[in-house]
Length: 186
Length: 326
Image (cartoon, rainbow over the protein chains, first blue to last red):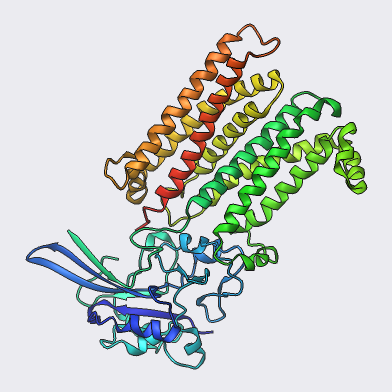
């Protein structure tokens, strides 16, 4: 089975927010709710400022605390390794929302938990997630980490990647690279 | 300086978590209270060896009340569910790593044990009230196993008391909750509130006096564990240290938590002072009945303990959701 990961090239993000729009349209995300977001972080004192645009979404963690917290098995790991929610099984206890250190989940107006699925329905058709497909600056790159020739494997081999809240021990599958600055401020 | 502007935030998670509200506070309070009463009535019956059932009978009110409190408390978490009609899935699966799953199975198990105790403790002359002949038969059989059932109630009371704290402490993403002291704190405060409730509902003066003495130790333990809880977080890495800041803040946003902490450290010691006064009054041993004024004073002290327990749970549930791991 593939090991899907997303690499986010922070330097290439132009802040157009097309990823957010594409995600909402593709997944019929309700008004006022979002599965992905873009953080605009400005650091320093004028005139020595540095701005970073960072896309954030579910990290599809290898050690997912949301799966551990779920009492019914609604939050589960799919065969392709991604973390998914079976909405028929979700009782809306919100334990997974509390358990996620990345604030990636929310409760839908119907009362069940929701989050990024890496566009699982598109993956089944051999397509890439909607946000990746629509990304103008090619900041979001998606692929199989087990395939050494995939773009994500090549990028992670070439650049020093970081993950959000590494100390939380969740082993995220969303990696951030910044070709200008080594490391980063995640 | 860092300036953040975020496009695409969800109101439930930003600027801080707004996930669990007063319904969970009431659930944790009533769950803890019920657990405390279970432990206390078990102690009341176990501390006198091989008590005949007729003498145990006056204790039937405590298990009955704990049953109702837990049954009502469980309704509050169901009210909080976004999709309660899917709840049956909780009983088709068991996830040992999910504390919610432990609660889904654990609360009915505790109610069952509590129910068995109620049936076992009903005195012979009152059994006709059970209406159904099969219940009367079960009651007769259970009476013979009074002590094992009492021990089971004691164990499940402890389980429920700890559970209310472990449920919160299992969330590693929430620094204020994610520590091992919290389950101990919730257990001690649950036991203390249980003893206070028994003081209020007990008819026998000896029982009131016994639980007043027990509660003194529990209040002292609770105050010590609260101090250790805050010190433990204060001496931890930055996100954990930051998590206790709302309790020591004078800003309008956080002042309510400072007031809560002050209230806890006023109410509990005040209850302790009243209880110690009672103890001093009867230092030569307790004989006979209490006067109305003495009973009123005992009940006031017990209500202070219950108020302190509720404020503690509310403050921890709400303040926990203000700070994140990042």
